[in-house]
Structures are given as C-alpha cells and as structure tokens.
Image 1 (tube, one colour):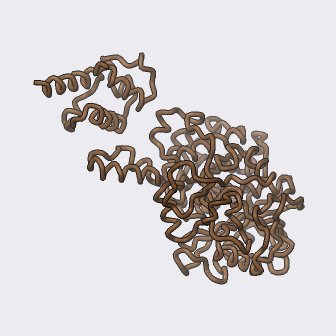
Image 2 (cartoon, helix red, strand yellow):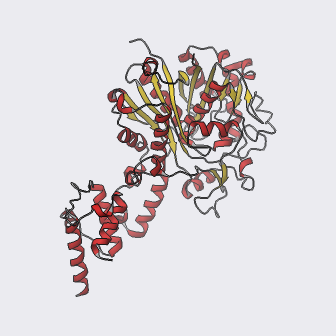
Image 3 (cartoon, rainbow over the protein chains, first blue to last red):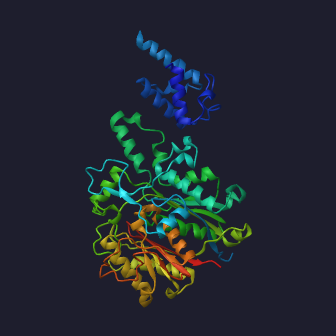
Amino acid sequence: MSVFETVKEIIVEVKDIAAEDIKLESNFEADLEADSLDIVEMIMLLEEKFDFEIPEDAAEAMKTVKDVVDYIEKRLADDNT
Amino acid sequence: MAPRRVVITGMGTISPLGNSYDEFWTRLIAGQSGIGLIERFDTSNHPAKIAAEVKDFKAQDYMPRAEARRMDLFIQYGCAATRVALEDAALDVKTVDLDRTGVIVGSGIGGLETYEKQHNAMLKKGVNGVSPFFIPMLIPNMAAGHISIMFGPRGPASCSVTACATATNCIGDAFRLIKYGITDVMISGGTEAPITPLSIAGFCAMKALSTHNEFPEKACRPFDIDRNGFVMGEGAAVLILEEMEHALNRGAKIYAELTGYGSSADANHIVQPDPEGYGAAKALEYALIEADMKPEQIDHINAHGTGTMYNDIIETKALKKVFGAHSYDIAVNSTKAATGHMMGAAGAIELIAATGALCHNLVPPTLNLENPDPQCDLNYVRGKARTHIINAAASESLGFGGHNAALIIKKWG
C-alpha cells in the first residue's frame, strides 16, 4: 500500500469521511474539518503504523495531506539509506 | 417571580431493559431481568461475574461515528438517551429559546474504560502514547458538555456528581432552574458505563457485589433475606422537563408534574448509610415540604433498594420514620433487581419507572423478593406487577459519601 493510501486510511478512521474526498492537496483544518486534537491523534496513529516518532515541530508544519505523505516518504527513504 | 410549575414531557432510556421508554416499561412490567453473565471482558479472576449490560447498542445509530470516537461509552449512552428522550417529547431543540434551555446530566464515575485503556497505553508506550482525547473522554461533566454541543442548548450545562444519587440530584437541580425562572426546558438525568475490569474489581473489593453467579437473574434480591449484594448495571436515562405553560403552548404530551425535591447528607460514614436512616428520611421530608404534600398523599415509592443489607434495612427504617403507619399502605418497589444498579443513571431510570407506574396505576414488581427480611416488612410489590391507584409517587436515591436525594411526582390532569 502506498504511503498516501495508508494516510488516507487513518484519516478515514479518525474523521469518518469518504476516502475519495481526501486529496493530496486537502488541508486538514479547512477541507477535512480536523481540529488540533484530531491532528494529534492522526500523528499518533501514523507513528504506530510506521514505527517511528514524528517530532512536534515536524508535526506542526504539516498542514495538508501532501505535507504528511512527503514527510513520511522522506523518512522511509532516509531509513533505507 | 412566583415559582412556576414543572412537567415531564419526554423520557429516554439506553438500558439493560431496552433502548426506549416504551420498551423499558413493557419489559419492566412483564417482570423481565436485564442481568446476565458479563460478556464484555474476561471475568475469570473476578468474584462477581454478572451484571446488567446494555445490549444491541451502536453509537452510530444515534450520532456520527467520528463524534462517537471521541466519547467514552458513558458519554455515548448519555447523548443517545437524550436523542431518544427528545424524540419521545417531540421536541426539536432548535425551535425553542436555546438560551433558556439547559442540560444537567451527571455520571457517578465518568470514563472508567478510557481511564484503564489510557493508563495501560502509558505503561506500554510511554507518556507519548496517551491519547489527546483521554481527558475529554474521562471527565464526568462531558456527557452534559457533549449533549449541549450535539443538540445546541446554551443555558446552564452541568452535572451533580453524588455517586448513586447523581441523577436524582441532577433532576432536582434542573427542576429548580425551571421552577425559579432561569430556564424553560431542561434535559436532565444520568449516565454510567461502569462494567470494566478495574471497576468490578473495586466494587468486589468492597464486598458490595452479589456473587450469585450461577443464577444471574436471581442474584439481585432487594429486601429479601437471601440477598448478598447489588448487581452492577449500566446505561443512561434522560428526562425532558418543561415549564408547564411552555409544554401546554406547544401541545406537548405530559406524563406527570414534578413537584418536590429534597437533598441531604448523612455526615456519618463514607459508604454506610446513617444507621437510623436519618439523612434518607430528611431528603424525603424536604421533598414533601417543597411539594406541599402530606406523607399520607404518597401512594408509591420507587426505593433505592440495592439488595445490600445496609441499604435495605436502613431505607426501610427511613420510610417508616417519614410515613409512620401510612408506610404500610404505600406500594414500595425496587427496580434494581431488573435493571441492575445503574449508578449515576439509577435515579433517572427509577424516576422514569415511577412515572410509568403513576401514568398506568401499575407498579412494577421487585424481582426475587421471595422471603422478605423480617426487618424489611413494608408493603413491597413482589411477584408480579400490581394495580394500585397512584396520585403521587416518590423516588429516592442514596449515594456513597452519604448523599441522599428524593423527588416527588404528581399525576397530571
């Protein structure tokens, strides 16, 4: 499963919205109606899924789904090198 | 402003005997029991293995799934029972003055299941493993908080937390807000979800729970010589209270008039009631004074009746103290043998049971009361439901901490 698919799955679990409504460019607050507590929970679920910690400053910089996907892909690539 | 009259226009339950007032009442009158073996967790090491669990409850039938995820079970029960009660009252909250509509729905304990899970998460994953929803799922005011958010009332929203007297205190407080002109409509009652491994272990440690595991339906035996403790229940019960003119103006169905509330403290012991039932009697006396009624006018009492030695004997003494010779004419029952002890919701489900009795002139039976304790010699309704003309009834609750509360309802029309 691609990173985008995994992120989407977690957003669906937390926000109960249709997967097809989640785009790479979706903004968590504006488009997905996620509040700060939702975002903390999603980050925790991602950490569990990918088995690494996401530092707070990195998490705070994530505004869109793409920000999250890019960050995770980069971390996975770094881990493999 | 002169005190105003308050009526009950809606009742909702999420309970071991059904998830609406009609279903609850039908099963209660038929003498059915909601008690069985605990299915929710492994009870191998628990001395008590029985409880009255809510069956067939799906939170998403009552609220969006994403909202339900942020709630402990006690909050889900409270919100669901509110929706059921509002439907029963045929009341769309958006059509009333939201600033003059409030919520007082309490819980005796709060989010126990959440507490246990999050504590485990911290032990396993460390401090960062604790959910951001831990605190807003745990704290006992969050049923009231979520109900106001879900349905929109902006008047007073709070909760009394007085253990097993919680819902009776909540309804009493809500009653007075309407009576003294602060609000016109109140959503009030209680909710509890205490069937968890830690909670059952704690009540077992107190030796409070019945261990008659082999016959779950026979385990809770209020006022019976063979009783050996209460049986845990769970769920929520919510009543819609309205100022009388407000209810009449919208053509609401009126179940009963709420006329009196009394509340007192034993100031005696953390979990044992005052040996002479002084506090319990005082709560009833204060409720009678507020209702402007004589003891002889009460026809039915839904007792706290937990099926513990302390409660049953002392509550019987308290009733005799208040009602004298008339106490033998009152049809007394305990519905806890059917619903289990719903803790913070008990006072509300029992006021609903008493309201049903008042409306139908039919008193639900006290299950399993086969051999009354000689010290419990009142006119308990046992065996099956009893026809009894009821013009006024009382419901009483006694909580750990020595909290006592009583409510009085009067026939409408």
